[in-house]
Length: 141
Image (cartoon, rainbow, N blue to C red; front, side, top):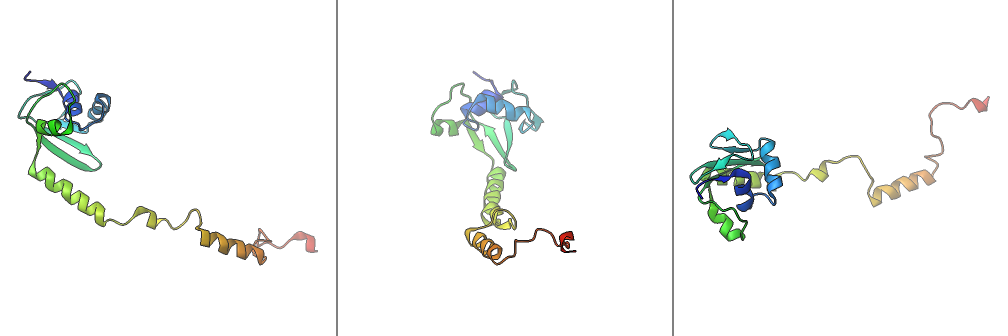
């Protein structure tokens, strides 16, 4: 076997859990073979360069072997070799995620904490929530 469908190779190399997922990602234009956008039926051979975009990081690998069956992870890792530029980019992205601010800390509004709920309840007991409007009632005339 000297050629294999790209979706089958991505599945056997364990980049995607199923061939269907691999085909969907290829269909979305997230996979390139030798710098050209691929289709699921595109065949790859040893020596081809495959670039996959996942989670804002492009992973570039060189095909080192072909397999039509999905084997254990150590065997799958022998089917490709990641380029040094790709390794550096993945490491830089991981470091950036490590130092990035926690998204949950940026939430200013939303559901109150237990302490915030107690403060709201205490304010309501003091008469703060008796009137819903700042307008003057017409009944007072």
